[in-house]
Image 1: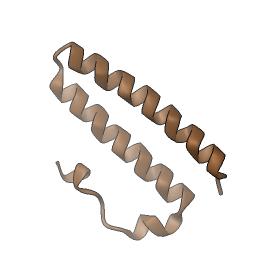
Image 2 (image 1 turned 120 degrees about the vertical axis):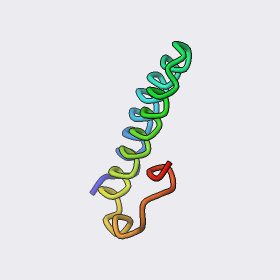
Image 3 (image 1 turned 90 degrees about the horizontal axis):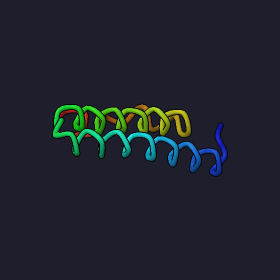
Length: 67
């Protein structure tokens, strides 16, 4: 199980990388790539949540996946 510090560091790492990719795609006018990056970030955060709290894996997927 991850400590809260490890969780915070991983969230910061994911957010930094994904937001950078999203920003680049938006600046280049690549909306579909930006949207894919948002979906990827949601997926990564969901996987991290499942690793941190396996009970959350039983919950239904968020609306981001359905978009």
